[in-house]
Image 1: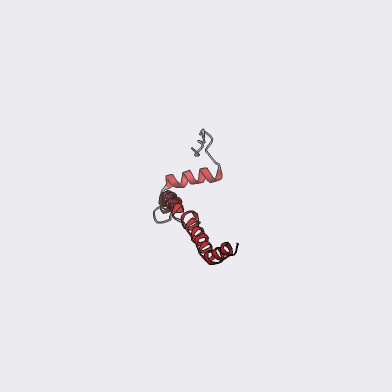
Image 2 (image 1 turned 45 degrees about the horizontal axis):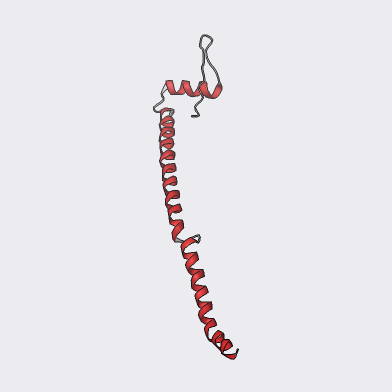
Length: 103
């Protein structure tokens, strides 16, 4: 009995150290900053880059519309379309068919 207690007393620091290494190893693999979450970060980066491309194209379209509506380069067709869209007006002899812009 004394021998068993002596072995336990000698080996418990090794057991605690082993458990600590297992804990660190588990979190190095599956933790929030772990190796397995790198693929999630890569997917997130690709998704955000696609969002950047879509937002950039929307911005370019808005900048073109704004440029066409400036006083220096006023495009009367664009002005007419914007006025009809925002004010919901049309002439008496026109038929307006609104198309849903959402896919």
